[in-house]
Amino acid sequence: MGIKSFQGARKETQQKNNNSQENFKVSDFMTRDLITFKSTQSVEDVVNTLIKHRISGGPVVNEKNELIGIISEGDCIKQISDSRYYNMPMESNSIEKHMATNVETIDGNLNVFDAAKQFLDSKRRRFPIVEDGKLVGQISQKDILKAAMQLKQQNWKP
Image 1 (cartoon, rainbow, N blue to C red):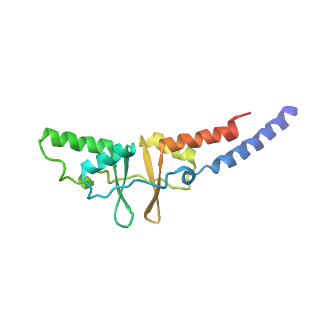
Image 2 (image 1 turned 90 degrees about the horizontal axis):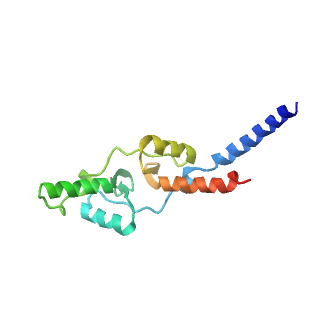
Image 3 (image 1 turned 90 degrees about the vertical axis):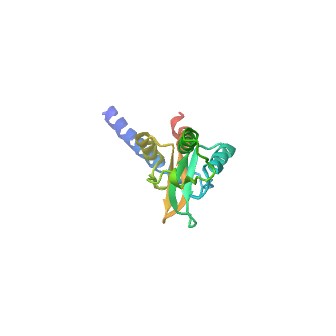
């Protein structure tokens, strides 16, 4: 009988832990102060910005701050490689032709553990967060790691 009541107490503890884990939302860990790009910017300008800010990519927005794509280091490298191979100048090329336009976004109210699963399933490095059609932030794999470390500080220690 003692074991039975002990198991019941564990379930209550697990429910409390699950409730505290639900409080770890993507919006609590996302970056709101983003470096964004315009589709008319040149590849060279984007590369310089990526290097200067030590980032691997960023969202591309229009004048209304609506997400229209994502540009990454890989997109820029491909353009540089193609321009060298075909001996074509790069400065006239805008990123509009080279950015990814089929962008997966993530809900800011999503639990960070569900977001981690989306990162694993999609092999993406970052997800933009859009509210009412406007870009409001971005969550990266590193942000998910920070959230996990905060959870460890709250729940994993004896």
